[in-house]
Image (cartoon, rainbow, N blue to C red):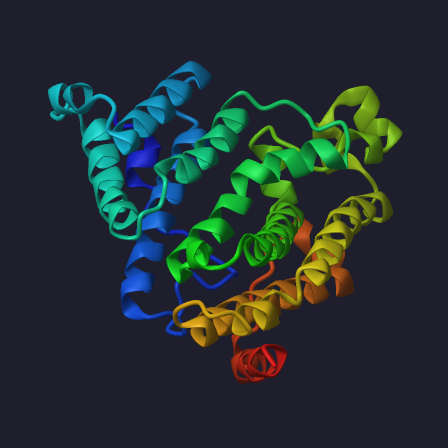
Length: 301
């Protein structure tokens, strides 16, 4: 039987993945990056293979992306797993070469997925932020490289990277809040241990499923509150991008402003009803799309 990551193709996303705000060539590159990230995530989440097998597949993914051992990939091409990895990395490599993006930026994602494969609890916010440095921040930096951030001054780049990292970390933490129960069932808890109630400290994070509603909600609100703070800290990124000389700066600014709007929509829903996270995953209120777009336009000026 094939590992289930080979069949994991449908994923619902609350945040835009290459919306029509982006130029077509950029959308294609972004979608290729997204498929790479999803493949690596599916490997790390696969229940049918051991932690060691996950690490080996993630390392093979990195080898194929860096083109360090084409023979390794070629010899095993009849293996369905390797074929999928090769196809995904080859498509992404094309866009990395086209936009002169260092593949090591993308490989940073694999660091986080290896951490997931051998999961260890996070003692505090700083350790979680360090995880997000690999799991989330490369996504924003990839998009900025597509925008042409290399052409900007070092001062502009650093300011933009800092705000981008804040937004990406925020979205990752908001995801942890909305997926809290699902992660627990998959033997992971992304809430730092210094916020665990005594029941979890004594019996492990699985005990969160048996907490009373008040304590359950407190766990969710702690995560979503930190995510909201990070999202607000990065809210000026669209304006900053609009003020640069980067290619398609207006379209990139709108894309990021839209992502922020979607993130805030999920935050508002969770804060209003944190208990719903334990029964269903919050979804974007699509009927508010005109409002999201209107706010996005306002927020870049």
